[in-house]
Length: 170
Ligand SMILES: O=P(O)(O)OC[C@H]1O[C@H](OP(=O)(O)OP(=O)(O)O)[C@H](O)[C@@H]1O
Ligand SMILES: Nc1ncnc2[nH]cnc12
Image (cartoon, rainbow, N blue to C red; front, top):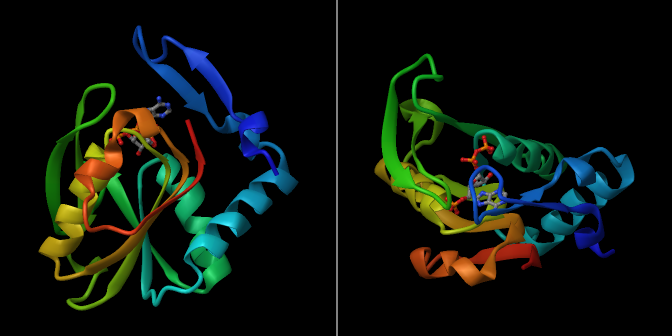
């Protein structure tokens, strides 16, 4: 399936110069959404995984159904100030602006193998911060899976040593 047909590109959102890849047009088609998650599962099914972690908000839309399908637990990584328990946090920059993510300290046990899932890899800032926090907790990142990769932003360069998989590339 050509998933790009279902992804809408909106110029100059959220700021001038950004070509925003809008996945809401893909998500609203149940068959295409399911096929996208199944295709992501196929890319990572040979991996030994204990948990899947995904960053708020669109990482939940990919990571949670993937976790359910693979019979694994899901660890939400949230924007700072949203998680009620004890957290570790990381500041980062992304394609548009800066942000801070947080993860519950007790969400990953040392040695657990974690697959990261998100909708889109752009500069890699979000995922580099995610990896930093998972590793701070003793987790082992076994890979990162995306629906979309913006190859022209070289996010993979920031994630050297990580097994990166993406369904479609721009
Ligand atoms: O590779 P990067 O340059 O870091 O950019 C990629 C991140 O940006 C978007 O999330 P955003 O922070 O906009 O949050 P949202 O999912 O809540 O819209 C996207 O869902 C990725 O997580
Ligand atoms: N160009 C883009 N489209 C959608 N989400 C993004 N996150 C970072 N860059 C993005």
